Structure formats: C-alpha cells, structure tokens
Length: 157
Image (cartoon, rainbow, N blue to C red):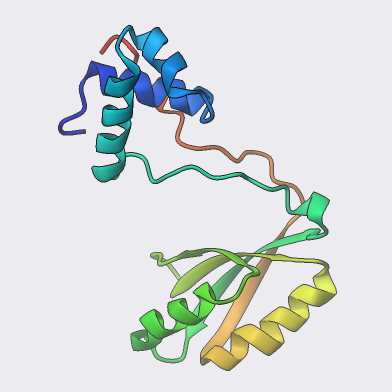
C-alpha cells in the first residue's frame, strides 16, 4: 500500500462499489477536480492497484452450463510455461493458477455441457503433455466478488 493516500483509498472504494462511476461524479464525491481524479486513476493503474475494467458475462446464460475446476498434473514440471501458454490459447479456459499442493496447475474451465467438458479434457488438455487431471464440477457459484477493499480501509484513512 505504499504511495496510496486517503484520496486514492476513497477513489478505490467508490470504484469498488460502481466501476462505471464517471470520473466527474467521483471528483464531486472526493471534492477535487475531474482532472485530479483522472491523474490519480492513471497513477493507480500504473502502480498496479487497478488492473483495468471489464464487462462480465454470465456464462450460463450464454450457453456454457458447465463450470469446472481442473487440477493438472504435468509429466514434466519444467513444462509449466509451455503448458500455460497453450492453456491461454484455449477459449474455454477462464483462469490458470500455479498453486501449492497436489496440482502443478489449477484451472477454471467453462463448457456447454458435461459431455463437451469431457471432450475438451480428452481432446485439448491431455495432448498438452499432461500426466493426468482431476476435475471438480461446480453446481452453483455461491460467491464471486472482487476483494471488498472497503472492509479493509475506510474513505477517511
């Protein structure tokens, strides 16, 4: 949190509540100019505090009814970078994590159905040089949120 002052915190809190809030509205809430908010936003992006913004789609409503977490065991752990590069090319792969524990790589994957998931694992994952995989299918996503930063510091810090 180096180089983050109370104005930066207030901006982050406001954006965490409404990522589409216009800079001028943030400026009014912070009692500074719109230019100051724009500069601070750019600074927060450059520092890596804000990674960007995005529109979040509902995969299920778009026909991707199966969400699965796949733990990947590599034949050769030195293949990690190559396999991650290949995973990044597969549109079904939403997340890739390098983790501790049993798996070399842990992924989140969307498929249209359980049958399509099976085909994806067999036809697209295993040819990457995997030893094996373990799959967990999600029945329902109960919580999905960004880090609730307003719980960790207040606008008045």
